[in-house]
Length: 473
Image (cartoon, rainbow, N blue to C red; front, side, top):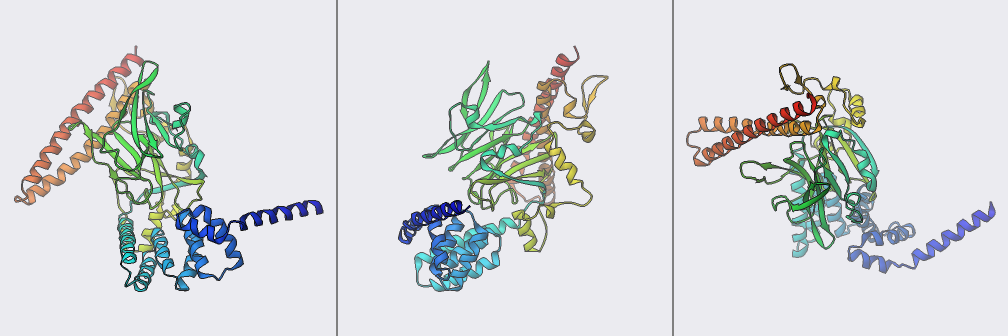
């Protein structure tokens, strides 16, 4: 026992001496170069020797903040701020803004402004940080009212294990698992249900990553195509997922004016213009000032998942399970603290509704197949005089099921377009002087609706014929 204790003590001494050989001057140089992870252990060691050193608290706090340890960083930056270290004011203000504590952030910004009232460079820096905090505040006020039913913290390298999709929703895998020998920094690939089309990202490191697609040609995939510039913006585009309609794409991007890091976006293929629409950025809580990515919706289960590294250690990610809304519904509350909690997902129970069995929903999220008893009456699709389907699981032909899923997705798009048409027609009737812009918008929407209606009709005929040919002969 004594020998073990002696060996342990020797190891501690060696470790301390090794770390101490990296001096405080080295750590400060790394800090100024933005190498916060390297500087952090030296600052921690020096802090143990001199915990009341205000500058040391500032350096340690910023290093923790820059490496994602926000809650731990607060105490050191707060101490430095109280000791009137000017750079601590702006760093602490930034941290408070990312925690959606905007009133506290503004107090720190005001202190920084007073301390640097004759320093134009510092004031320009403050202007940028303040503008970002104001932007986050506006987004918090537009948080979607979405029910988060579960959350699971997993190692970042294994985060796909938290996604449990039905077969009808396709499949997810790591890019490196599909393309043998290709290392792609933890990026993912989506394959549709019929296993005939894939979506993935390429690039990174020196070049931005962009989204690509391939189709199956005989037994192998080929005919690689890069998705259009409306999707592949500046920055990185990764983590694609395509709905069963084959036209709605969710992806993550560091461009498209993201809040910070990766944000989740959605776009649809427009049949009328034969191009993708300008991507829409999802509201909070799906997005945050941190990395948010790989949003997936399982239409068969009526559930979705998305990943976020908000408030997580560098090697971990939290995967949230939620109930997708048919239409985006924003929260309405004058309580900013409540809005901030919902935006940050401080507690998933805050989003729960009364009389909903969330334990049952969590169990459903883990199932590979969905009980048809729970999904009665999703739709009504006549196959022939004797047979009518009501659920996707009724289909016996996977091809027919996939084709009909596309029709269902287009029906949802048609529903949204018709709702927008009703709204614009009402505007037009209430204001005859609304001008040519509204008229042109109505005509364009009518054209889109007509195109969708014809495509839905074609897909339904194709699905019906395929099901009859493969399942009733």
